[in-house]
Amino acid sequence: MLRLSTWVSVFALGLSGLVVGCDGGAGGYDDALLAEYKRALPQKDVLRPGTPGNAAAMAMAVGEPAEYPPMGIEPTQHIVRTVEDMIDILEAVTATEPTVYKSETKEFVWGPFADEDNDRDHVEGGQVLVYIKDQGEEGDHDFRYVYALGRMVDDDLSSLRPVIWGGTNVDDEELGHGSGITLWDFEANRDFVAAHNPDPEYLTEGRFVAVYGKGPAEDNPDVTHTIVAATFRNFRDREDDQAANLDHLYGRVEDGENTVDFISMELTADMFPEGSNGETEAELLSIDMAFFNEGAGRAEVSVVGGELDTSNEVSTMLGEECWDPALNRLYFDVTAITPNGDEVTAENEGAEIDCGFFALDLDTLGVPSLEAIDPAHRAALADVAENGIGN
Picture 1 (cartoon, one colour):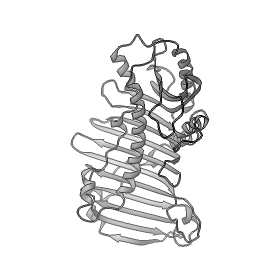
Picture 2 (cartoon, helix red, strand yellow):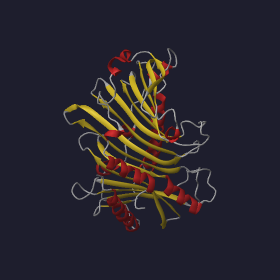
Picture 3 (cartoon, helix red, strand yellow):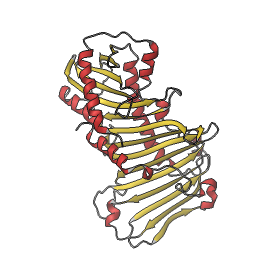
């Protein structure tokens, strides 16, 4: 169980260290040490999942494209864009020379620097800074390195508000391998902007948190596993009509010749906006899918709750689909489950046997899903995404 409560004291100590650190200058470190600390920041090649590339374009040219892959791919790509935006900010700040290095406490600080390029929520006199601390290999902490990005105004540390937090364990032998957690607190950012700019262009709402890891399989060092568990709560960006709550698991297994990518997600959304009861209710949409070599694959979908809870005809909707390497549909089935447990075929095309390797369900094939995550870990991620750290 991740000891999330310990992060509060860790970051509180770190931010108090900034006050002391800003009185001094950077020195006493070499390029190798600096590179070691910067490796503690999230890496795009770890957090970016594999998804169909050229195969997706092929699917638009021949045959009937599979219906379910975009339902998993598009939210995954949204998460990737969110993460990469965050990484770009961290990398831009740390691309400069550090402002402070404290050898006694093993901390680097960059900034505060003028936040001149942030047009969408510009704050007059706004500044940003990044902090990275090496907590050491020993001790009662989940991660060796911790980091934060904060926003402040006019060198006033009392205005400092951390908006990105994280912790990392890096693999000293293999670049890009390791584990970590990262939080983008859009609510903290909104509070900061509201205090200093009453009329921003727009502000993203909610919070995003992800736990991730990349490394060799326990039973085979030639196989590499990448896995990311991400949670959005009350998330709304400029183009979103409704706030979204999303739990998401994605990853990749690769052996040098072949890859298997998997996506598992649960999204709370109104799936039947023109429902028979005339009210807007949110259902729980669950999607699990896998791709072999970014092409052939299988998806399993279910919809429960919301309006279905009050329906006299359907209590659950289930869908299955498989596709070929060009993402052309081979098999498609939608089944409605009635309140008394009867199964009614709503739509069917092809035969499951045509799916080849993916004729077996994903659970039988051993494809990871959200259901395999310890409920306590999922609850901890949801709590951070809903409430932030230290709230």
